Length: 326
Image (cartoon, rainbow, N blue to C red):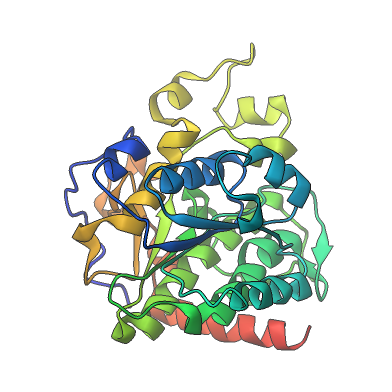
C-alpha cells in the first residue's frame, strides 16, 4: 500500500536550496542528533549545518582518527565514536556507548553508505552494499528505538537515492549467492531498502509521535563515487571526456551542501509535523514516478516499490532474521 501523503507540499524550497536557508532562524541547542558518516560528503555538510544551529551532533565513524581530524573545530572530539556498519558487534558497541550518555535521541540520520563497489562480503556472507547500507543501519535503528524522545518532534531520516529505481528487493537472492553480482543492481537494491526502512519505522513509531522520512539527496559528486573510473562516469552521462561536468550534470547535480538540504529539511521542518512514512527530494515530498514526465523519471520521483508498506514490513522481518543469524 502506498501512503496518500506521498505528494509534494510546495515547501518553498527547491533543488538548489542551501542548508542555511532552512536553519537560519532555528536554535537546535536542545536537540541530540546522530549522523552516521557525518564526516564526509553530504554527511559532513549535514553535520556542519546542524552544528551551526547549535545541535549536539554525535558522529559514529568507521575511520575514527580521520573523522576527528575532519571534524576538528566543528564537533567536540568526545562526540565522535568508532562504529563500522559492516560489523554488527561494532554497531552494538556504539549503542552501548550512546546508552551510557543517558541522552534522549531527537533525530537519527542514517547517512553513511557505499556505492557501486566491487563484490565484497561482510557479516554472515552478506553482499556488502546491502550489509552496510541497510543491515547495519537497521540494527542501529532498532537498538535506538527506545532512546528516541517521544515528544512529537523526534525523527528518523534514511538516505536513499534515485538509484532505488534500478532494483526492487531481490527476494529470491538478496545477497547474489545464486546469480551474477551486478554492482549497480546491488546498490539500487540497498537504496530501495533504505527507503523501505523509513516506511516501516514510521508505521511502528508514529503512534509515539516519532516520524520517519526517506531522502534522495540529489546528484552530487562526493567520495561516494570513489569506486567509479572516469570512463564509467562519462558513460553514465555525469562527465565529459575532458573530466568536466556534462551538461546534464551541470543542470541537475548539486553541491555537497545543497545535497544536505533535504536531510536538514526533513529533520527540522514544521511542515512535516504529523507527516511521515514518505520519500522526499529537493526539500519537499517527492512525486510518485507515475506522476512525472517520462523523460525525467530517471532522475526524480519515487518508484512505488520503494514506498510500499507491505514490502517495507517484509523487509524489516527478513532483515531481523539475517541479524539474528549473525
